[in-house]
Every structure is written in structure tokens, then in C-alpha cells.
Image 1: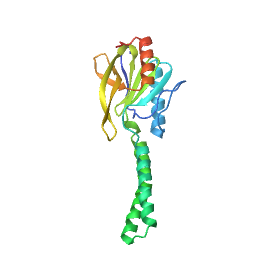
Image 2: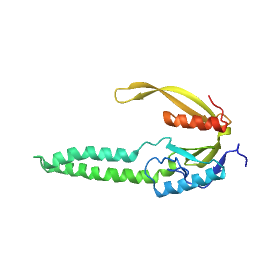
Image 3: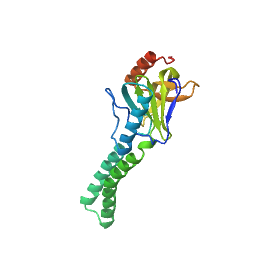
Image 4: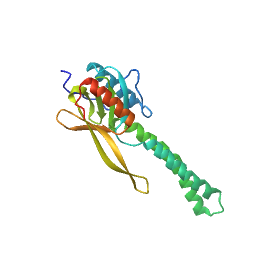
Length: 203
């Protein structure tokens, strides 16, 4: 296989992690599946001769664990307030239900995080190219196979619906198919620097 071909790691469930090496930044907690993927991605990048790992980032999925803890904390307040207040048995039952949910939601969220490691798409950036992981496995793309495009769009934030212009860097394969995109400025700078050095087609 030449450096200009994409390489797919078949039979690998993908998830959290990135290749080993200086400069690697882990995002989020690592489960057993995440640790296994970390090794698989590192092995795939090594086979392709991608060199040093720089960072990896989740390409979607949000942080369900934090949401679970946040909702649990919110439920604690009315649960405790109703429980210690001068209310009847019906209100006490409601308070107990809220407190039980406050405990169970974080636990359920953490279990969901652990089981969804293999389904969250992630971008792993190396000196010699990128590795994309997700439900279909791990796929490697050398920089000469890639073209980069900068796009801007309007995103809506918050309950007030305020709008903000967002600049994203899109990575496409040789056929022009969109592989992934990122909007983080520091990561875009790293990707553009490595892509230019590696021979990618730049904007």
C-alpha cells in the first residue's frame, strides 16, 4: 500500500483515544474500549509512518456525563427542599423520587459514556496525516491525499438565539468527500501547519 492510499483498520471498534507520542492530548475519560482504541490508532499510524501524534478531538456526541451530573444536581435542590418542608405524604413521595433520580441519572450517564466510546467519531492528527475513528473502524489518510477548505456559517447559541459567525476548516479526501471539520482555532493552526508540510492541498 502506498502513502497515497487510505488504510482501514477492520474489525476494530473505535472510540476515545489517539496515538502514543509526545504532544498527544487526551480528551475525556478513558474506558477499556478507549484504551484499546488508543493502541489500535497508534499501531495504524505507525504502520503508515505518520510519526508524532499532536492531538485528537471528538467530532460530536457532547458530554453526556456532565449533563447527567448537572441534571442530578438540579434535582437535588427541590428534592431536599420538599423532603424537609411541612408537606404531606404525597409530597414526601415526590421528594424521594427526585432524590433517587438525582443519584441514578449520573450513574446512567456514566454507563452510557462508557458504552458509546466506539460510536463517537474522532479526529487524530499526526505529522504524516490523520486517523479518523468511529463506528466503522479506524481509517488513515496521509496529508497528500487530503484537501483543506475553510468555510464560514452562522450558528445560533443560547436561549436568546444569538447568532455568531463560525469559521470551520474542512478536510476532504481525494474525491472531494468531506471527512471531518473543526472550528477550534488552535487546532486549525496545527492542522494547517502539518498539512502544508505534508503536501496537502490547501485553501
